[in-house]
Image (cartoon, rainbow, N blue to C red; front, side, top):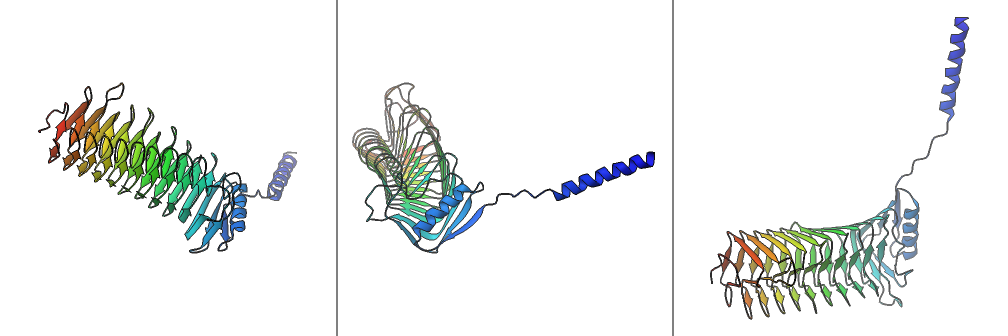
Length: 384
């Protein structure tokens, strides 16, 4: 009897084993690898559509040094919005809005679910009446070894408008982009957005109002030998960067700001009321402000550590740094082991100007050879 039970059990196990072995294999989604022929705009649109439909996205490789020229857009975009994980390898190729295009459209947009990586690509000539002339991002955007140039937004963010997403720009250039009516010649970052620039150049961008290079209301980091040069905020503040609002926090490390210009305040950087600015091992030279703060105009909290402020100028006060109190709490600047030299103000404080009730703290700094005086206002330990 026992033998029969054992044999019967063995038969059941064997039959189960056969059942498991006979089960059909489950297909596992894999990223697609798609190639697009030179100049094949329709093929590129189809590739993006196919990538969006694949749960694991795709890598789309363009032809080497080829131009993909768009003459029309759909719903404000040249390409379908990115909704999946997509990499576009440019191979030194370009996405361009044709000068013959009859309607306004940007080149790319990223939905909240999208993750877009651009490598070795030029994004040029996008034009929109709203935000983000080149790219509108609501998801995750990585721009690597690429150039965004000559894009125009009717409102904010000539090249990139980051709408609560995450943007990382590495080894890339943002050049000659324009925010026609409002802020952020190259890039606008909204309240809950995050932007990081590493080893990148932001040059020759223009805004009608604030942030000739970047207008930041969220979190901005500029790192690793990044350069801001010849950016202009025509009728506003922050030739290179405007950092405004209670959630705005800009961190600058090991970078350079040269020859930027603001029509009003902050030739290089404007740090607004309740905003936070941290700058370390960064150089500010040859920047100009029509009113105050040739290099930096601060109305919030600024920590400046081992920076160099040289040969900047202001049409009114604070040729190098202006600490301006426009509301509560009082503006505060802490300057640590820094050099402020050969700056010029038309009125007060060639090196540093501090408004009444502002706070300026110096820690082992050198403030020398500024005109008409090194400091004005209550700046303890500053000579002349």
